Length: 134
Image (cartoon, rainbow, N blue to C red; front, top):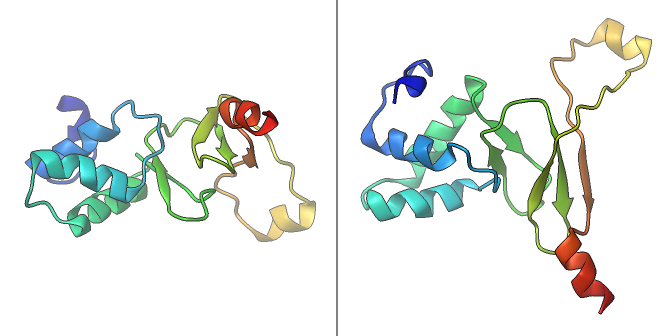
């Protein structure tokens, strides 16, 4: 609980349940995934509460939003620099523990402040690749 105090917003039981769900979660859940999980413990929680909490965490740099899934936004509590692989068949997202450096043209660097960059690759995960080859 102490590690969540630095986030800077009121830690309600519902928000704590959301934070606990995200803690160490590497499945890159959607807001709906998080909502359905927390709903089991807090049947009166609203989707708006989950979404507002995710937005607040994102603004505070405690959560990354992943947009590689064309059907829904996904979230990553691992804010260390890394990239992602998106499986086109099963829609799972995998972490790539490699930090890429992208060199932008001088004209871009002079005119635009780049705060971060992110690489997302898509293809088939090992399980789907094996299944497709059969």
